[in-house]
Amino acid sequence: MMAAVLYGKENLKVEPVAVPSIDSGDILVRVKAALTCGTDVKVFRRGYHARMIVPPALFGHELAGDVVAVGSGVAKFSKGDRVVAANSAPCGQCFYCRKGNENLCDDLLFNNGAYAEYMRIPARIVEKNTYRIPDHIQYQDAALIEPLACVLRGLEETGLSAGDTVSVIGLGPIGLMFVRLAKIRGSRVIAIGRRRSQVDRAAQIGADELLVSDGSDIVSECRRLTDGYGVDVAIEAVGIPETWEQAVRMVRRGGTVNFFGGCPSDSRISLETQLLHYSEITCKASFHHTPRHVQEALDIVSRGEITAADFVNRVEPLTNLLEVMRHLMSHNGHMKTAIIP
Image (cartoon, rainbow, N blue to C red; front, top):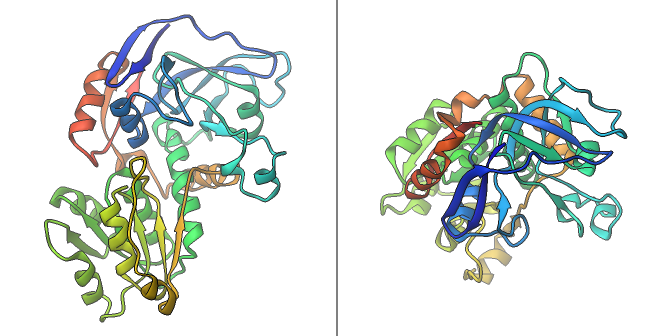
């Protein structure tokens, strides 16, 4: 089969490799759609991901497709099933899993290889985090559920309620998912992006107020839009220390900040202790998802509340993946591309 193999920093090749063999609990999926992801772009730029992928390795993790082979021990799925598989599964037995923090599992099993004609789904992911796609859902829509599950968990961590005002800093696909889900939950959304095109997209999916961070004081602007109080919830979906600090300064007393965007390694921020203490600001960070959030994400897609049309603006063959990655790397915050092997 043809597959994308990551060899290192910006070293990606689409080349012939063996079709993966499967064990008794595995399934083999013919990939019908694989979506690009901001994490994949970071991995392409850096050449690795400490927890998820060490080169040389097959690449990509957001996919939907058809089951073409099942291991002898698989009872949940059959050949011909349309499925979507998450990119990980927890062990269910370690300290963190027992505490309900499955996303922090000591033995979190990751799976890569979506940018390929076929992908092996290992037994644990088959059992814990693979789902049949309802007949009315298209492959590209189904492939959205992995990043959507991460956003669902992040929003849940903030305690956002109907009637709250939330600011979303960063309007790439992840930020736009926060905008959309917050609107579905009845919140007022202040969308903050670096370019006019980004905030225009946010407006199309429901953002109430739009701010372009072109050197303007977005903290003051957020307070102006909230009668001086600040927002109930601020979500940082960029991954820059400066915007982490801005998020803290734009919430009201008693507000909550979610540091969703991952900053480069060894980054540091400065927080004013008096502000945190006397304003009772809650600071949280969100990493990854759990099987419960993946199932909830599929339910949301099934109801039509989230569709690929809002987040995917290009379709390319697998052979063009290197060009796609270079384009996304030079257009930070760009929309998703659907790769069709």
